[in-house]
Length: 312
Image (tube, rainbow, N blue to C red; front, side, top):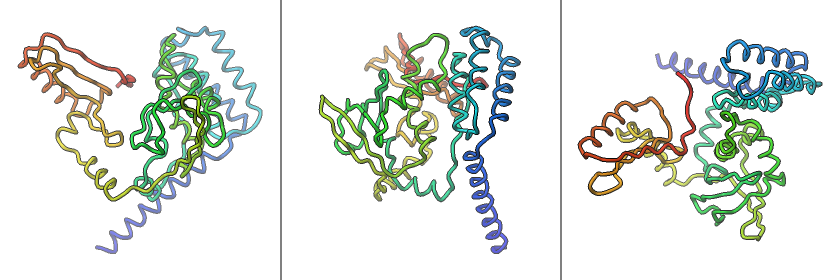
């Protein structure tokens, strides 16, 4: 029995590794231009067939021209990622926030995942703000290299950050004529795009400026201490409070929470960063019971930092 279980476990590992390898081979394979042009036509045909208001914010003439323009620029084979960077900017021109392509990215093995889990993030340990074509650090959680909030990142490994921002902004779908969503969303997505292009690197050189003074920093993917690993283990425990308030271990924060803003319960406050379905019914049922019992006169529902969701 033990031998059979071991063989089954070994087969699962081999299959999993093989699946990752095949997926990554597909991501690096170059697709002929004829096939890519067929994919462009297929994508547009599906949009015309299924989208109820495709030309609400862009005329048919302009969208036709943009799709034709893509095909005219495809003169050589491209990888899926390169093709994504051509097609997604046109999809975003339709100006519907829920309409976008999924960015092609490499998968990593369970062994690689374990290695990453035992190391601290490089870029994820900061919080960011995007203004125009500039990227600023607004929070340095672990005081990494003593980088001060308000520091602007000028280059990453000698490539101007503004080059990345100009490219990445075009990938973000926003609703209608909204002009503020793209930079707001990009502050959280910037390094998702970056990692999709570069992979999980172990070091990076940042050129920065703060109060007119330029500095260079070397970021590395440091190993976690025993205390860090112990804290990770604690964060992953799904207590009842964490379930109800939708705890996110990665950021050590909650997607929803409730409190009274004053001692006499006059003002109730609900913050909702995500309308996830898990335990949400229980959260709202208990929350409104407390509001009723507290006889609150006012209710504030704070949905800042909530990016919306997807239709069921």
